[in-house]
Image 1: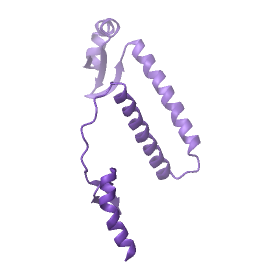
Image 2: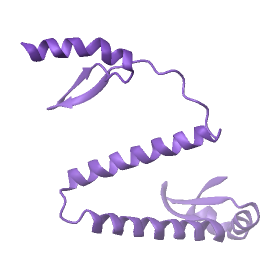
Image 3: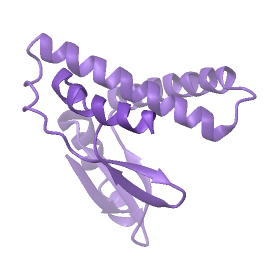
Image 4: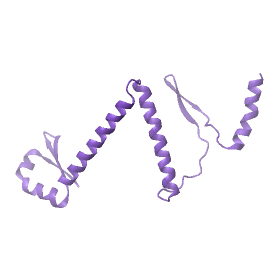
Length: 145
């Protein structure tokens, strides 16, 4: 549980606050003039935070080296695409293992895409063989013109 307290109340009740953090594994958010200035967390949580920060910093360094010389927009787009693909693959694996429920039957929903500054809605790309067969004659007719 996270408890919020003022700096004055924290100073007056330091022993009690330390016990709450040490034995109950609570966290204390310390405020000064109504603004958060510090937090008191138990040592195990603090060590986990430090480890996660180190891993995050290492990942950021690897990404910076990997995309050195690549325009930022292109790099962010590639990272977003790779992340979405990895999440999709993980979800599929988890569904196959029974760790996630199956997806409901998907309906053809319009997809939004950016054109200039306006978002344009277009029909989704059909994935089934029957849908492709319905659209293919229309494409051939356009090409023949």
